[in-house]
Amino acid sequence: MKPFMDADFLLQTDTAKTLYHEAAEKMPIFDYHNHLNPQEILEDRQMENLTRVWLGGDHYKWRAMRAMGFSEDLITGNADDYDKYLAFAETIENAIGNPLYHWTHLELQRYFGITTPLSRATAKEIWDETNAKLQTKEFTVRNLILNQHVSHLCTTDDPADDLHCHLALQKEDFACRVLPSFRPDRAVHLEKPDFPEYVEKLAAAAGRTIASAEDMVHALSCRLDFFLSAGCVVSDHSLEGCFYVPCTAAEANDVFEKRMNGGVLTEKELGMYKGFLLTNLGRLYHKHNIAMQLHIKALRNNSKRMFRALGADAGFDSMNDFAFAPMLGAFLNDMDEDDALPKTVLYSLNPGDNPMLASMAGNFAAPGIRSKVQFGTAWWFNDHKYGMESQLATLSSIGMLSTFIGMLTDSRSFLSFPRHEYFRRILCNQIGNWVENGEYPANLEFLKEMVENISYNNAVSYFL
Image (cartoon, rainbow, N blue to C red; front, side, top):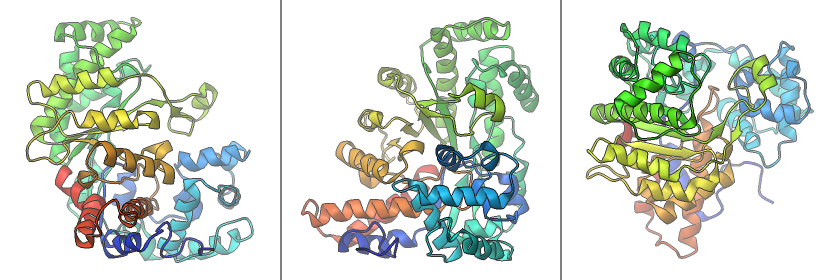
């Protein structure tokens, strides 16, 4: 029997151990997509206790706790922090096979040096030890980031944000670069109830009137210029349903006007406006050499009752299953036709799309850019051991694993960075198995360089 999550956790072969310990383990982290709060980084927040740092905004954990039958008061409500923690400890003890189990124990090991498995029985001793450490200066938010050698992290930011935290952090002596990401979803999703109010908010931030789809593009261009001045290197889009129908500017303007006048839009009309906006944004991203991330197929807020009670991003989203390959290909080709396709990262929440995305990425290339269109890492409901293995196997079978830009956290927790370690161990194990099965030569120096590139260097070259 192997020891529980020891130094060789998930590393099944000697080659895998060599690649991880001599290459992947030492690499910094470029976390190019997360939902961390830049205000807390600027303030260098000191977390009050383990509940606040673990459960404050993590819908992965909330879903697991609901599956255990705990009341909402113990999850997102006003229950005592220690009672919430005990509920989470019981949840984790029952989470066999769930990535939360591994993530939780990697975090206990890497940040606190605790190797004791978390359970109801051990909860009190772990609570006392972690909370004592959390009160020391080594455990402020910034030091939690530096603890894992994070060189860059890209938060997720609305175009109307003033980015005051990012601008202030640029003036401080902080070894990690905290960069904004341009996430214009509220401008794209005109079907949302608050779209008219958001138009007013964005217009005020851009200092210009928005009375048409073309005006929306100009306003977003203005805000993108501001984001670029704050160090932005990547954008991000959540695409749900029909997101591209070719149309003229006049047709997109008509759709915008209809929506602002209270009209009900057809699916085709939604696709026309969204396609017009997204392709114009894509051309702006290409012009400014920033990457475009497309997160596709989240089916959000399925429980309307809980959405009314808690709002969005509270753990009631799931995978969608609509067909979108022809639409995605046409969307990318629209920009590629005049050589204005930006670097693009493709993700689907449904793993059934993996071969399609991997093959789609290979359709669009550019001299001097290694895998200009990337098949992105296993995302959200897929960022577990088997999801990562599947993504890596699909990418290597259809595309080029050596050019892959690697992992991200997609997290709201400042303890989440060991997820990069989790990915790197799985990566090294996959390569190690190929080598020891005689499917690739044991050229360890070359393989170590490849692992270092996938772990960090490829992301640096791609985004910076």
